[in-house]
Image (cartoon, rainbow, N blue to C red):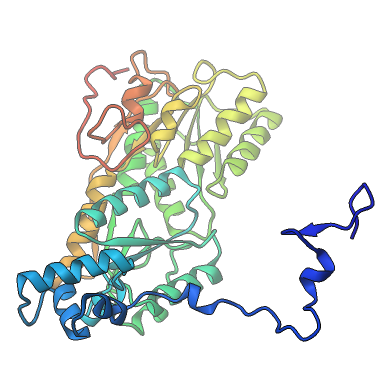
Length: 399
């Protein structure tokens, strides 16, 4: 190989061919295996001049006592040789991994991301870790992730299924505790932590009726999912109570693209309602984007509200009126169930929720963007966190 000047390329000051081919009679270069050797307790014992057993007693704080001077010598040796104890091996020896697995459908969803954030915060408070597995809305990948978590002997699995048909058979083969987050068919198999989605959607839709909107479109999830039906039931209830039929009903994926296409079709068909309620924040984002692209004002011409908002809803334009779930309470309840799993009933445990008022519904006095972003968080500067416990007042949020 030659450079632009015609001279042969050098590799570390040696001609390329010379670097690749050993000289006659010379031994081929040897790989330095020892350089990558992991430091172990024998290295510590050798450096400290003690037995391996003594090193173990210091690291494990027992079972036998070690003289203070010897302990200090062992600790100094650990520091000098750079020994890192195998925490997982120590934990497993005690019957626990101190690790939980969280398998979720799509970690790019801000709502799911904030649940993960809260779970990690509560795990860390307990000296635990959470391994995250993103199934990417794929059932086969979900099963593979669950199997991998079980193989790693996690202390428990926190499970949000791609569909309501959970991998019950796979998980029942193991004795690993499982707690399901959100609605699914887990009752009778595993405990679950969730809000009452029918009630939440009823309150959300009633809020739109309270504005005086009588022409409503309802967008829920795919027909194959139980929570899609539950959410639509909740949306329909207040309409039925006043004898109003929805202008349009959509059964679409819980995605921005699906919300965008559905709203675009409504505009094209000339069937646009005065208000739209969606099954999640991402659908609402797609709806608002489609209306904006068509020059339709939200909320001036069409009001929008959604279930399962996140801190991201504060910085949409307009800010989104939505049901916010108490991430901190959900995470706390998950770990409470794990702590007392043997006596836990295999049923749903409901948490409360809040109606957070943004600009998109048409309220005259919505919450500020900062208040929406920090909903349920303890620190005002933590704008995109949802792991806190503080409550914000809605006194200034009335229509």
